[in-house]
Image 1 (cartoon, one colour):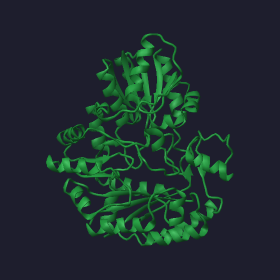
Image 2 (cartoon, helix red, strand yellow):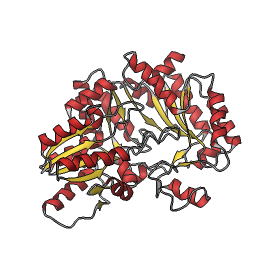
Image 3 (cartoon, one colour):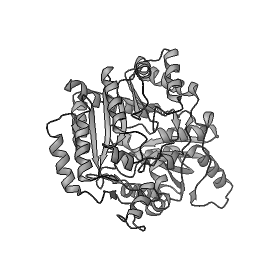
Image 4 (tube, helix red, strand yellow):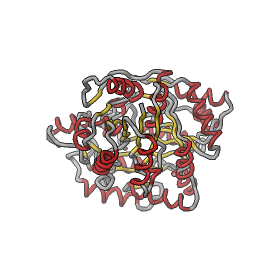
Length: 448
């Protein structure tokens, strides 16, 4: 069958991101004997209608798959402006004017609330979770004219060699290399943590499933070969998993002599100087910590597996290696009070030479652990529609007062970013000066 895959993500914060999920599914479909074309609406920029028309005419698709990476930008202050579903619905309407091809929705954003998104956007079918196996099965059912449920859910999860390397579209790869200077690679799926707000376990399961090391190494080699000046971001939910797969990969990179600037999401616990030093020998340039909360009480409220002492120790370790670090934290979550807010701000003062990106409020998704918590707490009704952005705030704080307190505390510290759009303004300024890459590390080094 002729398949056209479309990535509809147009979000550019913190930087434009290559549509890795779409290309991974494309790889599986091609191996399944299908003819696959890939389209990217961020690449199209201001010529989206013309670009899409051309793609549909060139492909003459039997089926169109649309990848929805994000519903919005999860920023309480700006998420209404970044809500994706109206533009997705309009896109589907335009597609139907040109072709009778079946339209299938998928992707991480879609899989969070599939039934409501499918209904709102008026697509034909939806795939929940990983698409490599499910998409091929759904296509087989379509070819046989079998009766198909509108929502395709499966407990099948890819393992090892089943997790294909992406079918990189070189035109798109070149675009993202130029636009951001960052290209992304996934080394494993699954997260065993129980963080209250997070959707990764819903999407990928709680069992860590590493890709074949050789396949990841080949992906790295391909990026180095094609775009030597680029950086890599490893997109794993948590890079430094407790099973040590991350170290196996880094050791393989070192053995293969691969050196390229890279970054990843780290959990601020259990790190050693020797481990980070090994990472730096392969190109680790900066560490992004998924810290999430700023006091022991709120870390416990978020169901994190570490305390603030561990956060401080991890930051000091990075500083001892002259390795830039950044922490992503959320104020206003479970167990937050005015006292913990002020304690948390004082705790952040201890994180010297480290950047802090602060958010206020937590995006609620239906059937998520946070939704159940909020319902039990009485802060949200069970029937609340969370398709439009809804945020959790502890009943013990006032968001307007918290905003003022955070802004005042951060005012004289250039390494403290709040509200989130302030960080994007700084990143844009660096990009306009010609810088490429993750870039927040430049802010840390300039402060030093």
